[in-house]
Image 1: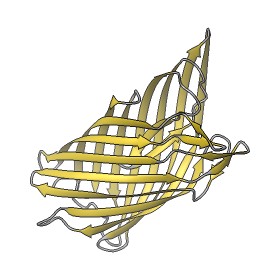
Image 2 (image 1 turned 45 degrees about the vertical axis):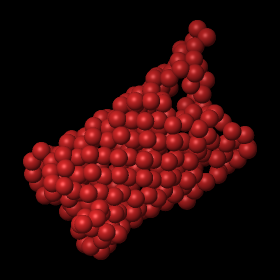
Image 3 (image 1 turned 30 degrees about the vertical axis):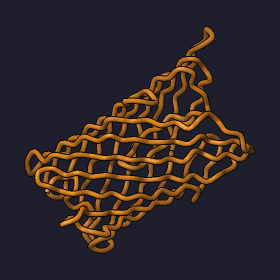
Image 4 (image 1 turned 180 degrees about the vertical axis):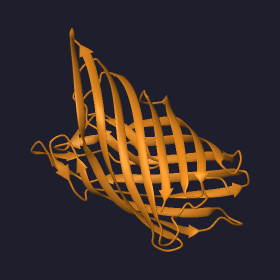
Amino acid sequence: MPLTVEHIITERGKVKLDLSIGYANSDRQGVSAAEPISVQTGPTSFIAIPTQFGESIGNSDTTVTSLGLRYGLTAKAEIYARLSGLMSNQRSSGLGQSVEKNESRFVDAWAGINYQFKDDGYTPALVGFAELALSEKHRSSTSRFKSVMFGATTYKAIDPVVFSLTAAYRYNGSLQEMEQRYEPGNLLLINPCVAFAVNDRVTLSTDVQWTRLSASRLSGNSQGIARTATDLVLGVGYAINRDNTVNTTFKVNASGRGGSELRLNWLYTF
């Protein structure tokens, strides 16, 4: 079976290390603090990086590292936890001035569960998931248990091709930011994918990812507008052996915000 679906749930009693390193480059005009830069750290996980530009032109380079552990609870369920940190260099110019900002910090920690409701057979397989933010770092505050994300993936393997569709929704609760009530925008994601198993070790994949991020609110006032984006995601998976796999994805924006992302993911089963 192709790497995209083989051992999708960690085997019962086993632990899987999940290490992800993502690099994002973004170039914007008219950047404002109300429109954070979004960096994807996994198939359905994102972090929002607040910007302080307020200038006419902005460019940034951001590297995000996520470390997670998965544990096979049963033959159909796994629980997991992950934490993320970032290093960022943001540059902006306007009105005859140039500003550069460097940042290194903790981003967030999440815990969740994956459950396989149905195996692939006469009808497509179905896997559901739900996760809760244990801690999230914002501009001047830290929130706990304020964000949740839930969704499902369905897939059908017709060897050597796998068709899949993932849909997810992230809800962000309100919090106190700089003595004001801040409500981050909520995220909706739809991601169809076609994967092709070249051989027993290599899988190629092509995704189209659509996202909608609603406008955030500060003290009841809308900050910016709802934003949609369509991205093309190209991926290569390589199985070093049964318990050791590496996946690389390159995401480029087709419409919406500008920028591109490169992500390397390593999965190792103990």
